[in-house]
Image (cartoon, rainbow, N blue to C red; front, side):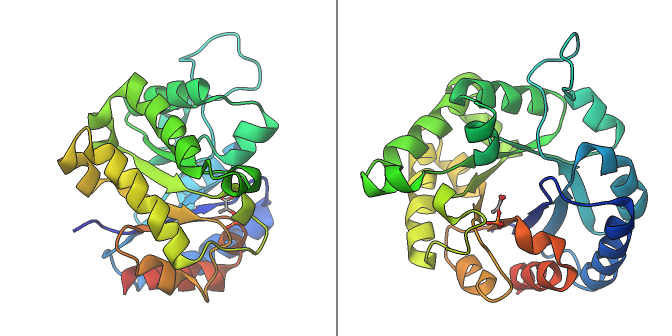
Length: 252
Ligand code: PEP
């Protein structure tokens, strides 16, 4: 039985003041849910110290939204996995579609980031997903396969025992258009089947999240699908009541 995970992706949002209010509310609302599911927030780097101090000892974990593929060195503006360890991060998102599209991260670079994160005991949340054009041209499965396989080629299928995959159709991110539960389930099943060709046990155990306009009012039906193990939540993770409701949906 896979444990569900709801991870918030704050993207480039937040301030010391706003975060304080949000984290206080999350602490209160999520503490009472227990540990049947995992909840986490992935925050901008400058706020890692803040979430570490406010969330340690609670049932909310935290992480970052990106990491360098390099260990250290002359990489101005980059942040290493070792630095994330300094703040006791559990998770790091790699290959979010915004990183792939706006910052040119290739499948190879994403795979390298995944590998570096794991080497330093961080749990990578590997984002995969197709654009609307790719869905319309019936290449969704091919795109997803290439994105997953790039990671498997570099890190091996066993690496998925300590990783999370997030299926995020690009056309559903921040648009208010959610994949239907069946559309999402179909791709989650496809991802799991692909992994099962290499290792059935790993495939059965890997957490596969859905992301793309998950809200308080659609989380439960998405999470009820057999291959959907929770969600990666953008916009709704910034609204305490909504994020708590989504976490609650993962607990039922
Ligand atoms: C995301 O950015 O990963 C995401 C799923 O965003 P939203 O929930 O806002 O669509």
